[in-house]
Structure formats: C-alpha cells, structure tokens
Length: 245
Ligand SMILES: CC(C)(COP(=O)(O)OP(=O)(O)OC[C@H]1O[C@@H](n2cnc3c(N)ncnc32)[C@H](O)[C@@H]1OP(=O)(O)O)[C@@H](O)C(=O)NCCC(=O)NCCS
Image 1 (cartoon, rainbow, N blue to C red):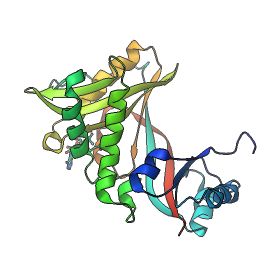
Image 2 (image 1 turned 120 degrees about the vertical axis):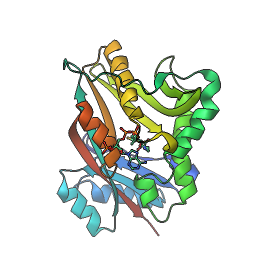
Image 3 (image 1 turned 90 degrees about the horizontal axis):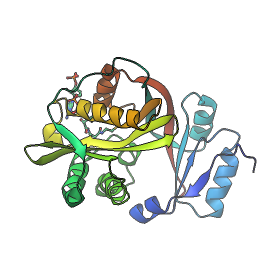
Image 4 (image 1 turned 30 degrees about the vertical axis):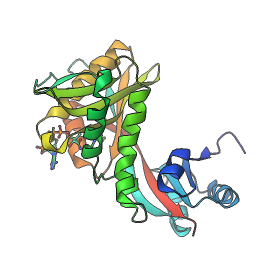
C-alpha cells in the first residue's frame, strides 16, 4: 500500500461496546474504496465507520453506490490565537481543572450531556441507543484516567459540576478541546463560553498558535457559541457507516 493509502484499523473500543467487529478509516477516497472493502471482508468486519473529506464528493458518491449510509458531518472550527480580541469571561461559572475525587460526578454529567446526541453512533438505527450514550461517558472516563494536571476542566456552580471540557496539544502549533459538554439542566446559560475562555488561556500558556474544535453540522447550539466567540470553519468530513450483513 502506498503512503497515501488511508489508515484502516479494527476499533477494539467499538467492537467491544457494540459486540460487532468494527473498523474505522479516515480519508477514504474513491480510489482506495475497493481495497478498504477487501480489508473488511478479509477481517470479517461487520461495521465500517468511514470518513471522507467533505469536499471529496467523488468518494462520498462512490461509497453511496456501495451501500454506505451517511450518519453525520463532522465540521472543524479554528481560532487564530494571535488575534487581539479574545472575548472576556462572563463569570456565570467557575471553570477549573478537575480534582481526583470528582471523576464519578463528571462522568454522570458527561452521560447526561450526551444523552441522545447528534453524532454518527446515535444516527445509526442498528446501534443500541444506551450503548451510544455510554460511548461518550466512557470516552470521558478514559480521558479522566489519563489526564494531565491541568487539561481536564470542569465548571462548578454552587459546588456542583455542571459541565466538562478536555484539552490536548495536537502539534506545536495546535491545541484542541476535543470533548466537552454541559449538563442539560444548565444548558442555554452561556456556560460553554466560559469553557472556551479557559481553553484559550490554556492553549496560550502552551504557546500554540491556534485552537480547534470539531462538532457535528447538526449541532447548531455549539456552532452558535463558536462563531460568536470568533472561531471560523476550516474543514469537514462526512461520516458513513457500512454494514456487512
Ligand atoms: C452545545 C453546548 C456545549 C452549548 O453550551 P451552552 O452553555 O448551553 O451554550 P449557550 O448557553 O451559549 O447556548 C448556545 C446556543 O444554543 C442554545 N441552546 C443551548 N442549549 C440548548 C438546548 N438544550 N435546547 C435548545 N437550545 C439550546 C442557546 O439558546 C443558544 O442559542 P442563542 O444564542 O440563539 O440563544 C451544550 O448545549 C451541550 O453540552 N450540548 C450537548 C453536548 C454537546 O453538544 N457538546 C459539544 C460537542 S462539540
């Protein structure tokens, strides 16, 4: 396989969660499609989760002809940290690094905030909805277990955790808040804005030049906040599922 061939791998996490052999590939193209399908047949894959660049309609239409179903569109937003006018805190919530004893409470917030989420898992009628909800809580649990001293943020109001956000450095130039949510009882109060303020300061402290966040095109709420904050859309991917039975 050439170096430009997209990486395809068996996803142990998805396989275990959903009880079917699941593979994942990002950057699938019309040219690589048949080799990707061969891999799936050879490895007895039951579910393939495949992402193609949103500008690559050739890939999207080739997949559709082979029975792939569109599940979501993942969009990336980017904020240039060299800008001078980073918005000010609104002060509705105290955002700070999580404490070791707060894992259980945070996981419960993660489960509630992603209940019935708009992502590709929930869009697939063949996947158990409870297991889809659990995917995000599980992701939060795993990132909590492997957190650094300051990259896992929680928001606190009256000694209650109302939201969380997890940060990482992707490259010397780029930071990302790759997972985050606000408990449904506290949504619509501008709390996520405070997470963005804290996340931007974290990124600035790590000397990266930009901060990125990805979300689903259907997630209007978070995109409103991102755009008002100054983020700009940068790229996107269609997420397809292909079942092999
Ligand atoms: C999306 C989310 C992070 C936004 O955080 P938030 O603190 O509620 O953001 P805001 O209070 O600034 O609300 C943003 C916009 O969404 C709307 N909104 C927020 N929660 C809403 C809800 N539950 N139902 C309908 N609209 C809602 C707000 O009215 C606001 O729109 P407006 O500017 O027209 O008034 C939060 O709702 C959430 O955690 N959702 C579930 C998980 C998720 O989407 N995580 C982010 C993945 S990238």
